[in-house]
Structures are given as C-alpha cells and as structure tokens.
Image (cartoon, rainbow, N blue to C red; front, side, top):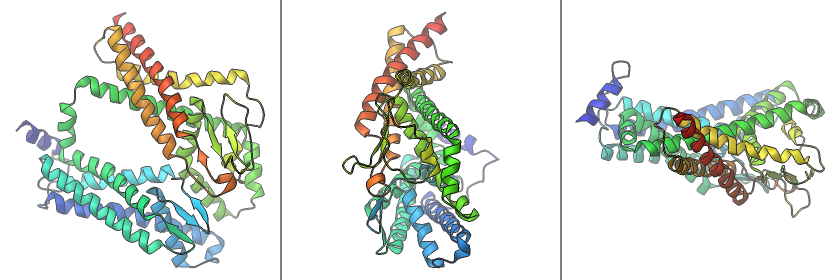
Length: 403
C-alpha cells in the first residue's frame, strides 16, 4: 500500500497522466522511439558531414546514410573491419547520449502507462523495451553490412542489450516509481558506499580531463600546426572537431590511466611503432597520426622524477569521494570508518578500471593497432591507490566530525 502511495505522489499533477496503455505496450513504443530517434540523429549528422565535404561531390546519399548507421552501431560498441583495418574504439560521448535517450524514452513510456506498480509488470516492460531495441539494432547491422565495411553483429547485439537494459530499464523503473522503492530497501551504509565510490571515480575522471586539457593547451601551437598541415576545408574542420568531441571522454580516461600510474599506449609494440606514456617510465613516441589531439602527448625522453607525485591524485580523489558522501552521516568508530572507506575505494576502482578498459581498442593497424591502457595493470593500480585513499578519507572524515 505504501509503495502504491509513493508512486502516486511521485507522478503528481505535473507529470503526464496514464494514457490507458499497458506498460508492455508503452515500453515497446519507447524502445522503438529510443532506437530510431538516435539512429535518425546519426543519419542526419552523417548527411550533414557528407554535404559539408565538397558539397557531397564524393559518394552518394546511400553511402552517407550507411556511414550514419555505422556510427550508430559503433556507439553501441560494434567493431568494424574497414578495408582490412579493424576499428574498435567506442566514442563514449555518443554512447552516453544513447544511454540518456534510452533512459528518457523509458521514463516517458512509464509515465504514460496505466500499470507497472509491481516488479513483475515492470520486468515484462523492460524485456519488451530491450527486445524491440535489439531487433532494431540487428536490422540496422544487417542493412549496413557491406564488403568494405562489415560491422560485428555479436558486439552490436551486446551493446544494444546494455544500452537498452541499463538506460531503458532505469528509465522505466524511475517512471513507475519502483526505483525509489528499491533504493528505500537498501541499507543506508550501502548507499553511502556506492555514492562515495561513484563520486571518487567521477573526480578521478575529471582530474584526467583536466590533465589532458592542460597538456593540449600547453601544446596549442603544435596542435594548430597539425591542423593547418591537414589543409582542411571549413566543412572538414567542423567534422573533425565533432569527431574529436565524441572521443573527449576517452581522452579523459586515458588521462586517468596516466594519473593511476600504468599510463597508456598508442600502437603495436610488436610492430615497433608503439607510443608509451606513463609517469614512471621514459616516454616512447612512435609515429602517430596527424590528429590535433595527439599533440597533447609529452615529449619523448626521461620523465621528471617529481612527476611520480601525480600518482597521489587518485588517492586524493577517493578520499574526497568518501568525505563528500559522508558529510551528513553519523560519526563512526575509526576502524569502521576505515573499512567503509576502503570498500568505497574498491568499488570506485572497479568502476574506473572498467571505464578505462572500455575506452580503448583498435583504430587501425600498426601505429593505431591498440590504443588504450592495459586492463590488468589499471585495475591493480586503481585498487591499491583508491582503497588507501578511501580508508584515509573515511578516517579523516570521522575524526573531523567527532572533533
């Protein structure tokens, strides 16, 4: 009874009322809207880019539409083989937009449904939403396949499952009010640990973004020279800027990997054209593509000894996450505060390692055969630094509250 009352109060007068449609039917429509809406946006952007490049003198409309479909699939994690070259880095800005679109569609569908106040009905709605979304992804993958550029069906389906399941599922749970019911049943200390972990991971990602932005700003002249050397038209320059913006979160996570210690690599070590960047080893620069973003890479040679101090940034981020999440909590014994802080640091390390691993992949062969950080090293360094930081943050927070 209290759950139903919570849902009715949440919907209130400012939220669109039920339309008499069952949740499963509304979820099916929401899955179609989420998939086709984002797909149409990618197709429109591809057509615009095609026209800006020499007013569409190269190729035709079908090629542009197929490229837009490929971009949509890449946002779901699909890998391509383009004329023998593997393309596998996911533009995480696009993936985030897909998740937001699925979330909004799911929440809107739940707001307009007449049922969904129990877990069984919500589960059927989520399954329907995900099923419709995946069907659209399979159709797009088959339609966009060609000899020169063939998307991976398995990864496309898996990515569509994750985007629709996480984004659409959370949207449906939020719109029906079940998410509030579920979170209300979770112990307070568990919620505090999860919030602290996410805040710490977000702070580390922000620190990585600041590092990349600062390096790019310090290398502004080199980046400008690279851009001018490409001799791009205005339309091509705009397109390149949009592409770099799509990969901005990837670059920020590479910066986080650098702050953690393992750093990242660009290229294939076996082919002898690898670029390796980390604060604890000399910088090795191989041949890199003429892209302005790569101008942020440091100069080749020994790394200054004091630079190893930046590996303390993840410790600080984890500690701040715990401190910020526990500002309004009751002071704990120092040993319990340390344990909870360490748990938050561990969860934050797992989230960070997964995000950094997902941000890498192949962008071609030789000098772009493997772009990103080693998953195992990142996980070990993240756990070591963020668990220590979380424990220290928990102890200092509890001590300060007692004081």
